[in-house]
Image (cartoon, rainbow, N blue to C red; front, side, top):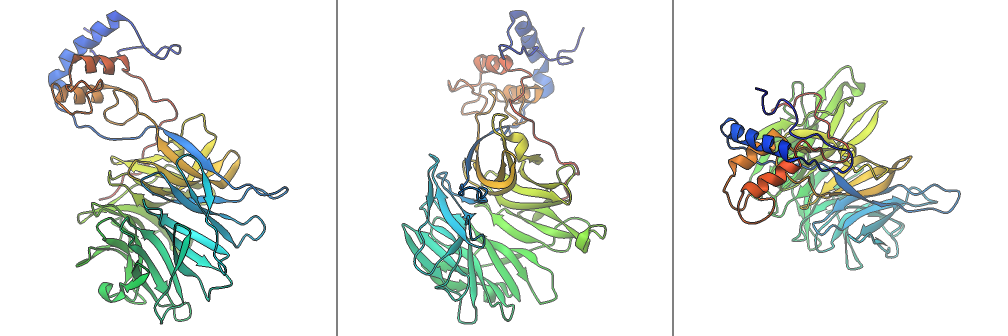
Length: 452
């Protein structure tokens, strides 16, 4: 007798895309009964197979090319922030905010400000970053909200500041420095008042790159002028030194972002004498004392993690000399190229992924058509294929095992028809999609295994 799952249960017809045939359906049900004990209870994973795209680019008068437009921040309402290069004076950057409906609004400057580089925005529309101009003595951090600019001053011993992140309580993370002495320290701003973290972190140099909704902070610390940088987690009481990236030869780490579970992502240097500079960078996830290296996309040499959601989805980018840069998504232990997850109907590539929100939307610097590194891109998760419980972009034995494991359960992702119970109707929906693959391109797995 032929094994049930030696061949696909259905043959995918090119038109229409649904498979039919009662005889095949009866064979599938027979396989289900045979697999009941073999598959057992599965676990449901959340993955993303495909994204829809919104693009933003500032045009310039002929004969100038379009301005490079970068989206760096994204809040939970789907609003983004970023900047584009001035069409004629390229050292100036023009800040903007985007709306979910595609509206693109330039932030009007106050007198004395000619350039701004937003870094983040919260759900109340607070935008933070760095500004400079003829009315300022140096580059300073800023907070913008409802048309009002607030300059975030450094302490008296500093002459430079920058805001890098903010939470929904209005707490702002960043750093201040002195460009003459080289001094640099992590700090917070609350209601425009600076809170110096240098004494708390006991660092020679430090930087705060992100703050979560609990007010906890990550970034990097350097204990002495000669010491290596290490990522840290500060919960308002304790400072945890996360140590170097846990890869053979790893000797530094820098925290780039953290979520509300205090999971930290970033990157660190790993010794590699064959590479320019004698090192490469590897991306990591730190979770409750365990640091995991995220792996590498095929053909690339370095990886940088830039943000993490509360669902533990991680974004960043990989790069290599002579190859270029491409954005990645790390989810459920699998590293995938973001461009491979963009629907084929869009002529868009994702180069650098900057921010991910609670809805799984991702803000990127991307390529629009033949123009590389040219436009801001927001990727929005498309509806997943019904029956794909494991998030691997196809409906197969693993999804069947999960459904059987939840048979009779309530409030289960396997309740496809939302009637309150996982039953034969849900099984029928799964079987209709059996062996179907999500439209678009498939994600690529990590070429080299991650380290923990």
